[in-house]
Amino acid sequence: MRVQIPPYLLKSKNRNLILLLIIISFFTLYYASTSDVFRLNNFNSTKAESLIAFYANSTDYFYNPSPWTSVNFTMGGNNTADFVSDAELYAISGWSYIHGSSPNIINPEHPPLAKYFIGLSEIIFTNPSTMSLIFSMLTIIIVYLISREILGDSLFALIPPFMLVFDELFYEFSLISMLDIYVTFFVALSTFFFIKGLKNPKFFILTSIIFGLAMATKWIAIFLFPAFLIVLIIMRNWKNLKWFLAFLPLAIIAYISTYAIFFINGNSFNDFIELQRAMLNYQLFLRQHSYTPPLRILQILTTGISGQSIIYHYNINLTTSEVTLLSTEHGIAMITEFNPFTWSIAFASSILAFYYSYKKKDHIALTIPVLLLTFIAIFSTSQVFEWYLLPILFSGFISIAYLLKNFYENMERKTLFNYFIIAYLIAIFIFLFISIPYHIPI
Image (cartoon, rainbow, N blue to C red; front, side):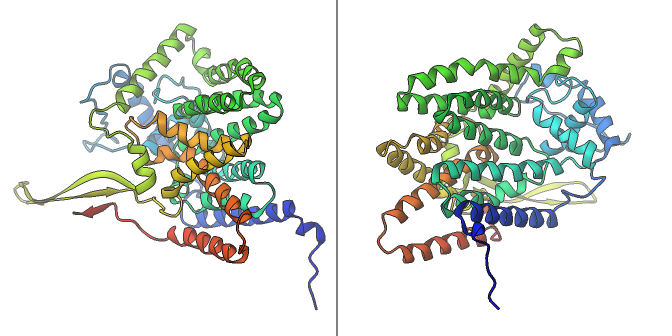
């Protein structure tokens, strides 16, 4: 008995949507099975309340940062210092915000929007990380929609979301209450509406609003503004440029609106300006260091090397509490989430994609490589961490797919190239399960 496949399922658009659904389903089931992201009551509200009280009295480090500033606190009435990670701090902040605290009381160094979502996750799911997984799934869908705008309804449009699903950095941050998944979502969504705006300027309204929300999540989204300007200038579409700039105040309004509780709590607009000034000073203080090598963000992206590392081996005498240095081990610090099949070629692919799209006057496709190249240029001299790449990885992945599609269309032996693409995608999948050491001795 032959199984008849309904004809409408064979249409490229419907076929891609079905395959995308399969990818997202795998993503959700696999990620959920390897974490506590769906575990209920995975948030200690009692601990959060005690830490909120501590941080409410510890904002001097924000307004007057110094190289020796550190934040320590004691829990439960004992004398044991309890370290709080960034993810835990954002979870605590989200709990505080969602219960009416002003964003300048705790964790004022970052805008509040993502922390409201984290707090909402704690209220609805009693878990600060569940909303991260939801936003990561939405991001996969948005990346597919962007890919379809550029690559059409071909199977190539599924390659970028496939790469994103099996990217270990994206995987890790989908399961914790960090800000970066949220800003990645808003960056991708703003990019999608910008591309739509190139065809119909009315979409620049949504582009600007969502850009403001991206900035209200994390300031790293600032690269979108110069990137969009560069695309419009290269296009010489002065009419679209005027529309884009005309709607830009909507981004400012969207950003300020996320501080509604700040104003409701009695703060003035001058207080808001002072808070933003303090945030800027604090971020500049953290990001600018003389020991940061130039183009470090590019080094991380292309090689997976974070820098030099030194491991110290100690012997601790438990009786006398004497600590003796036994040896030191010099080496190279590696980014454990690095994938050489995607990260290492994303930058070169963006340059080639820029060349091909510019040569073909494909201004829609031109947007994507400009995003990554602008990001690298802006953050090339800043102190950065590997997770700062999250908002821009999808751009590199789309550039890779764009090149593969162009090579395929110009390839005479298409069957052989099909096998190459399949082998390439399998390699990306397999590498998710390969561990990169965080330290390589030299």
